[in-house]
Length: 548
Image (spheres, rainbow, N blue to C red):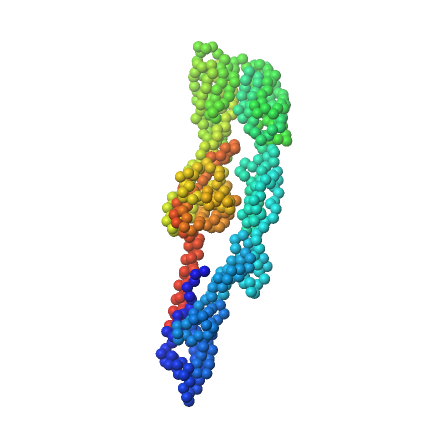
């Protein structure tokens, strides 16, 4: 490594003229005079820093201390020719710290540390190979851990940064995303925060047709076996004679749009509860309808997420009024409740209406024709849309240190926020970057330099309500990703991405936080350099005071 010579300059500049004359006389060996011990003034005064002084009859000579050498490249010297002792950079000798060791030069000696990807064995850092039995061994995490209800499908390496990939077994899924385990600097596999959970079958788009038949859709495409549905029916007569009709029907089918026709009584208000028989879990669906003579609405169904269509039994020339009562709720936002009531009139026998519904919300819609005695109820679920853009302050950095990324929590107004990611891209790829791209990988992938990488990922539940700061390049892991230092002299674009995920739909929004041109030291590295500079100033001030 390049170093400037440390220590004092030629010692002769520090000696008084009288002392120089005495030294000269002692060296000449004048007759009738006793030998003067030139070394009595101390090695530092006579020979300079990092030296030992040796008296001889009529003279003296100087020797550099261990770890230093004379600038005249001789073993001994007399400082009247400007020779002084300078530090020896032992780290110029390769392999000094053994395999996996990193050498750091110190004044008069050196220290050893383990390189990235290696663990310390039999000792502590720093260590010295001539006096310690300490060594560095390459990190190997061994076989990846087993995961419940998951199968290991890929393992690139058991070395530091190696990633093991898992997929869930049939009938299970990982709603949070891909399941991985990373080999850490401790030589152990980091346990995944994601798990495989049993697929929750959801019954959607329940509708009634032919007055006594029910049709629905199920959303679990990964389950290929037949499913047993339990249809519970409860009916209340509309006439003066109070009676209850209850029965349970089971339907076994592999159809993705099952339907069943029930033996129902006329003139009855029914509630039908549809669920999946154990051991599978499901979100049940409930629909209410009537078989009363006065019920004029049939075949009600939803389309395009926010629209309804139905049939009306009436004379062609009659106009009908429809009364709507709508409730909206969100499981991820308990305080959100929306209720609407309105009416429309139309003479169409196949009316349609599109509702003003919020994204990422479950709705129950009650629809009653003015000519009917009871309403029909249908459930609608709207998909999420892109989350709000990240609230970041843009920075343009030219060769200087980066500020800390200040991360603010986004509002869940378009759907639940699942995670926040910090992406580091080559600046040339900024214009071609797509926020919906899922191709960004970890820093340790083979394509990180060319295509960019994910420097940090934080789950929404781990982000505080006010704000948090992330130093770019602090060498820590955020989620499953390594926050690597930026390479000096390169141009980067740093992007903050917010991900919203619900009902197996994923949406993203992105904002450019910083453009870095001719990247230099990070903020943490600048702090380290600053502390080192302060230490040098203190040492120089102390030496100057001692000389006075």
